[in-house]
Length: 307
Ligand SMILES: [Zn+2]
Image 1 (cartoon, rainbow, N blue to C red):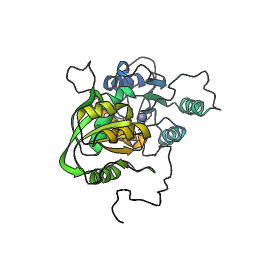
Image 2: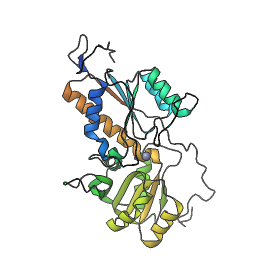
Image 3: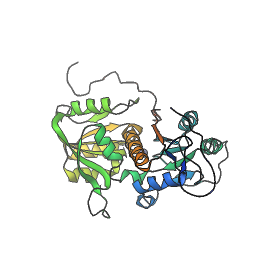
Image 4: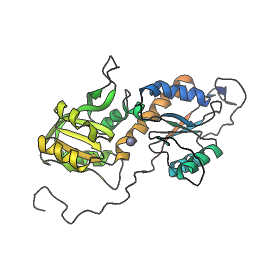
């Protein structure tokens, strides 16, 4: 890759890169493009999205997308020479009174500022976007999106909203669908947990990237065969399978949201090309799921089939 010398100076607008026709956009221009994809006002009221760190006038040549704004990812951004880190999860969800480097989030802020790296967050505004987090999850599993699971009432076209109802091109058994999810989603210690008859036929699936157990009522109302999400807790999962033949697939939270990074990076890449920007867009492959190991129980097949 060619390295570029960034032009600096006052004023707004992208600067032409020396010896090149491509333009180095300012952070404010890149953020405006991201805000166009995931407007902050579409985030949940409890959420904390938008730009966390960054000078609007700084030039941006290299962007890294990741799920979590943790130190490991920020160190990766430094090593890559990124000017902007875009994450799905917020750094500070509830506000803070300190960014002292003795706290782990403060250390993240210090590393970002010392290295001239901006941080921008697109969280629930990316969940409900069209395309959004669950479209990326469905795409990773080759599922055809039919409609949102919980449509956004402010979208007249009915395309935005939480989760997606999807169809399979060819019916699969639950066992086969779980195997596909395990193969197509990035590898984690957890893998895929399954509830239901492994030989049950699955034609329709609801998917929701991230924690999905608040959506059980909507999933049941949709009448789908299976629900793929993350962070399913004992009681909601237990009640869901007791009251309907709904099959459950529970993946690692990080793994269900990571496909969005690739989608978002492709969207920004396309915007960069359209604007004639000289932007290099990367996706972190670092697994930041907090669970790092899995010890299978002695009984590995609980389906009742003889081993
Ligand atoms: Zn999440």
